[in-house]
Picture 1 (tube, protein in one colour):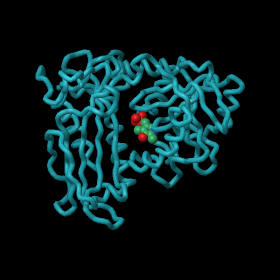
Picture 2 (cartoon, rainbow, N blue to C red; picture 1 turned 90 degrees about the vertical axis):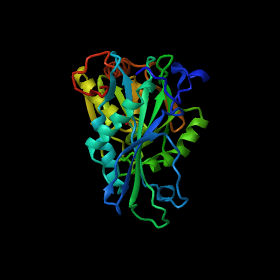
Picture 3 (cartoon, rainbow, N blue to C red; picture 1 turned 30 degrees about the horizontal axis):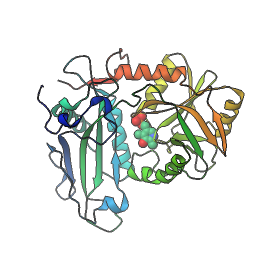
Picture 4 (cartoon, helix red, strand yellow; picture 1 turned 60 degrees about the vertical axis):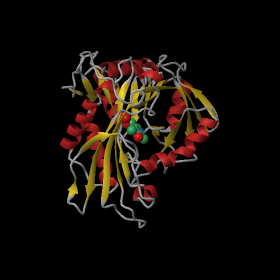
Length: 356
Ligand SMILES: *Cc1c(COP(=O)(O)O)cnc(C)c1O
């Protein structure tokens, strides 16, 4: 404790209250190489953050064999606290994504141990201003220098850390979203439930077009029927219609969000009826027209809960309730962020303290 981080640009206006997302990195990185030829996983290394030098034929650059995760480490009330939120779920999802992408799974215990070690070494980087955290980005990809379409035999697994700012520095900012029936994100049998790079590349054009029309995110519909709802941007989606909370079921096309799972559990324990099932855009439009649509919000690690104020579907704009943040979204946000920073009790055992 107490040492000034080597690369932390204190003198150049480094300001915890204005961190933004994903441009500042800590001093170190963890790498674990995998080589089929050398018998699999090699010893983990924690070393100064450095550039990767890749052959131009590197498999991932051509055929996209890659998986990543995203979670946050929080400072807690005690000086030594380093709090992770349900990291076991991220690790399990990482391995599930790897299976889908023909990437070797990593031992969950090793993953947790090495990730914790890295975060502890760079603990001075964990920001303490309200709403801030240290974003943790595990990644794996195929590194073989080979131009054939094939499963890689060599991989690099690494974890990098990035201090990130409060998502809502000035309070909730409800977003406007565009329902697209032009592009689709995933279909059953595809890779929609894997956190793999191609899903994000495939979504860029839709979000660029949405941005150009003044929308923050795209709401994705089912690829086959263009009727049932899937997710919003890179978040899961929830609707409150009267007093029932509805979210699309996990059927292979959407990301099984850690936040989604936590929201379902919390909302049920708050006494709401929560349904995981099919919900169509027509139902949502009807509910918006009749006034039954009380809330609509996304869920994900970055924003935790992201209220939607308005959506456009087939050229018509629909305001969600009065366009302000709904009470359920606000309660869930407070509860989740409170738990994550140990400001509130955690009856679920979701928060893991890796500080010591
Ligand atoms: C990561 C992600 C989510 C949210 O998952 P969390 O575990 O809650 O962060 C939702 N949808 C997509 C497409 C994602 O990539």
